[in-house]
Amino acid sequence: MSADETPQGYSIFRDTMADMTFPEIARAAERRAVVLWGLGVIEQHGPHLPLGTDVYMPSELLRRVRRLLAERGIDSVIMPPFYWGVNQVSGAFPGTFVVRPEIVIELIVDLIKSLKKDSFARLFCISGHGDALHNRTVHAGIARGADEAAIAAYFVGAPSFFARVGIAADDPHILPTHSEVERPSRYFDVHAGKFETSSMWAAYPGLVRDELLPALRSTDFGVEDISEWRKGGDHARAKTPQGYLGDPAASDREFGETMMAQHAELVAAAIAAQVGAAR
Ligand SMILES: [Zn+2]
Image 1 (spheres, rainbow, N blue to C red):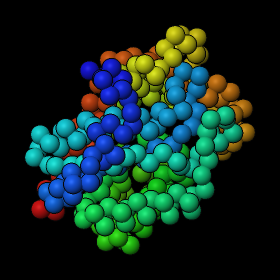
Image 2: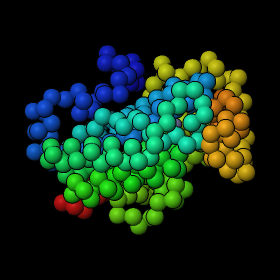
Image 3: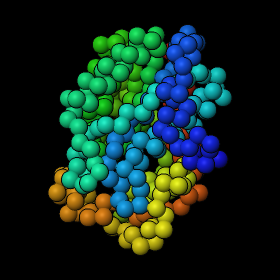
Image 4: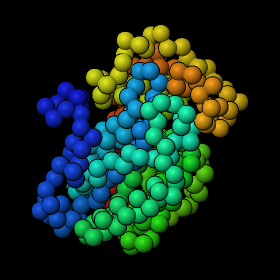
């Protein structure tokens, strides 16, 4: 059953700590449950995907990761998603909320300290948003939160992701997955294109304006186009007036389901290996 066909609807709080009671949280901490945290942003995602896409996707991913960890005997809770972030690239579009990096860092540090207060000892974070400055900011918040709260906290992601956003491969606060989901495409497809739209369509079909997909033409961007787009603001808006970068018309629900399942398996395997090593 997909998330938005359940009786609970597609609430981002579904299966998170926000839907638990305080005694349940206390018992989870006593059982030494690990904490899973998805960090996204609210930003434009073309005419066919909702602004909250980067929050919905890690939410669905972590529900799957939690089930996979349980199969391996690892108890976990999901922290309510973080959804105010840095939107350097898409900031000029309507519906994109822009927060200064220093505010994001301070908020992440306080939230990690709250976990420590509740006696949680291990935190694994994933990002739903690709913006490089946003991810360096999230990483800075996790690193400082881990140090100040004396908690083990990791940013989990693919090696190529950390390389692209400029985080060193040997950083003590990252946990690279051992491989990554294949995303074969001739042109860049990085924002609300085939990959992101397929996964959203699999997990939240009711939120995708799929009737618009056939008319959305592929952007066919090469290296020069994407570096112009990454300058952000008015550059990005001029480069992609429709908001997306990629080929949303090529989206496929089954492909999205396959990618999501593979991604969840990779993240769960990395966390399980880390938890096993620390036992
Ligand atoms: Zn996105």
